[in-house]
Length: 115
Length: 116
Image 1 (tube, rainbow over the protein chains, first blue to last red):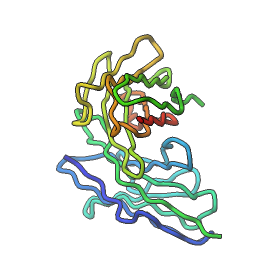
Image 2 (cartoon, rainbow over the protein chains, first blue to last red; image 1 turned 180 degrees about the horizontal axis):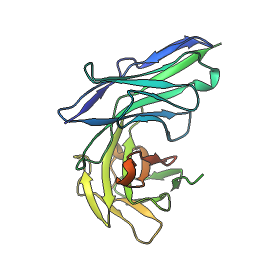
Image 3 (cartoon, chains in turn brown, purple; image 1 turned 30 degrees about the horizontal axis):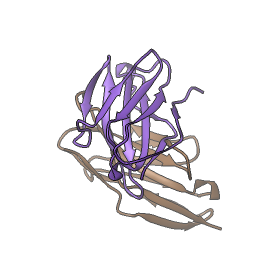
Image 4 (cartoon, chains in turn cyan, orange; image 1 turned 90 degrees about the horizontal axis):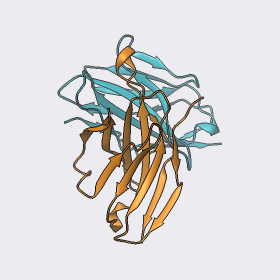
């Protein structure tokens, strides 16, 4: 079975500062990786994904994540955060190659942007 | 942009009662899912549904749960006899299909179920 660890439950950061939200996973098979964002009182929105190819993936709002197979990590980064980035961020994995179909989520990291 | 919708947004029920949570997945999607998020905890997979049958379910999805696609648009989750510990946010999700590498799941806004 696979698991996802998000070590930081909360990350406070000042506006316009860089941020990194950490995600590590464990799995005995290949996985696909996702980051979802949950704004207050809303559902989960897909932020970005890694399926194959380039290990660095980017979102339209300035976030990026890098798949590191040797470290089994998929950390999320943004060089300069904005107040509107305040949200809960969830890392998730999906076993690749068919079969198991449900996403396994981490516990989430609450990103708090301070003015 | 098409999105997954869920009704109701909030459901309050008494312990032992049956509830049905409703979802309308994105119209050309083939795979459907239910997840739940107990307050303060991680999002947990319940069940996946494809071609009118359950394709995978978790340990949480016991005999008190059932899913159905009663028509071409709705996807429902029924909890037969609710317990206090069923109180959670329930998310529906859908996915287009595996062809073309479409693995991402799109989530609805959720239904908050409160069991009293």
